[in-house]
Amino acid sequence: MTVKQVDDLDAVVLGAGFSGLYMLYRLREAGYTTRVVEAGDGVGGVWYWNRYPGAKCDIESIYYNYTFSKELYQEWTWTSKYPEQKEILSYLNYVADKFHLRKDIQFNTRITAAHYDEAANRWRVQMNDGTSVTAKFFISGAGCLSAANLPNFKGLDRFKGDWYHTGKWPQEKVDFRGKRVGVIGNGSSGVQAIPEIAKEAEHLTVFQRTPQYTIPARNYLYDPAFVQKTKNNYEQIKRIMHETPTGNGIQFGQVSALEDSPEERIKVYEKAWQEGGFAFTSTYNDLFTNEEANKTASDFIRSKIRETVKNPETAEKLLPNYLFGTKRPILDTGYYETFNRDNVTLVDVKKSPVEEITPNGLRTSEEEHELDILVFATGYDGMTGPLFKIDIRGRDGVSLKEKWEDGASVRTYLGLATAGFPNFFMITGPESPSVLVNMPTAIEQHIDWIADCLEYMSQNGVETMEASREAEEEWSRHCREVAEMTLYVKTDSWYTGANIEGKPRSFLIYLGGFLNYKQKCNEVADSGYEGFTLS
Ligand code: N01
Image (cartoon, rainbow, N blue to C red; front, side, top):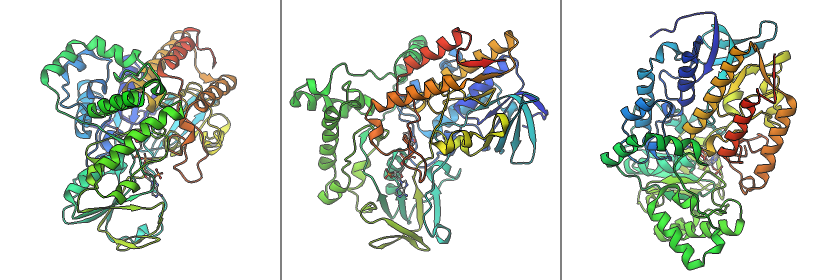
């Protein structure tokens, strides 16, 4: 389907993932001419690109969907507790078809630049095919984790085998049979891919820099009667997604881990471990704020690793020693068990760092490992990375990158807007709760807010909406203060930017809770957009 070519639109939206699709739906409903620009040849965003073996979501599927359409909720049937990538991609394709969204999506196209023209009050959006378009509003649905991090390993260009990044997986199946495979990285992506690759490869070598905590997902097929019940309870699902702290049905424990006796605590942890999923992270109310409480959970997981992994030396290498949960907790299916397989080797690259990729494999400071396939599960330049891939310039030609001083001082108002960039909105932008809430919840809340804001502008003859410097200073300061009160800032992770060489450290996710955040957003809107300059 070809997108109707017009030179001037009401809005250009970047990306056709969960964000872009619903943003398009809302804008179209309000009568705006809109074009969504998408680099892939299909919808889905992260679920389009992350096709690696084992890729699935760590949020329960009944909560991992849109709530804007009751009819859609009734029509779609999830098959398992944690949905696989394929199923989520099918869901998003179904959404695109049901609401006839494709006709306004330009696929196979990257936005390379978006410059604000002050005199015309228009954004000029430049594409990689040489075309450009102007629009009153420029809205980013680029997501938080769409800029893949491929570390600069010496020699990769000489590698004779095939290599892949988990976040840019090819559409066709990668055949690992009879192959010697190396995986670098053991975050959420690596932990999901490793057990699946191990089942197929002749030999798998896992290059691990930092051991991670992972909890069994214990995924299972849904009973159709259960799914029907959730459909019948759509209003309740919607309420859980939008009116609870994490939007995913998880209830947090009410007491401190230190209030229970050691014996009682073990029982609580064991029960949550057997249940699987994030039940474990929510057993007590202070696991992420009190180091002593945190240690009890960390110790429990370490004991599980020792119990599961048969080779004591390998088990030791797998023991994490950072504060549990300060990197995103991971859910797995048979991860630690994978290291009991004869065809799997674990290499500690903190002890013996990767020196170079050779034509035939990878050399650490200790030895060379011969490999046919290399998989980089090395993560993302989170939050700012997707925005910095595009040359976004606001007033006076100042780029977002310059304004945020290469990330050293990111400043946003509510993660939705930033001063100097009128009529530019970010869906789940830096300094909003984003990835620490159920993403579809965070996305719907942001999009509804933006759509309502545009409606207000139209009804009140407002041509530009721009965050004030004072409001964003205050919001950014508040974000930093809240982060400092938690344990998150004590650990190097992509949350803090520490995973990207040279990226300045800052915590770019709002940790004050989704409900507080939503209330603040609503108050701003109800007050006639306090903190924004309207003209
Ligand atoms: O990336 P990561 P990810 N040499 O940054 C290692 C979401 N997600 O793609 O810890 C050697 O977590 C790095 O080592 P270290 C989710 O929010 C969700 O796995 O930096 N190793 C680490 O082991 C998640 O948090 C789902 O020492 C290097 C790994 O690569 C986020 O995406 C599934 C290295 C990167 O881990 C990112 O997860 C997948 C180097 N030079 C992703 N550079 C679900 O919903 C990096 N590493 C389940």
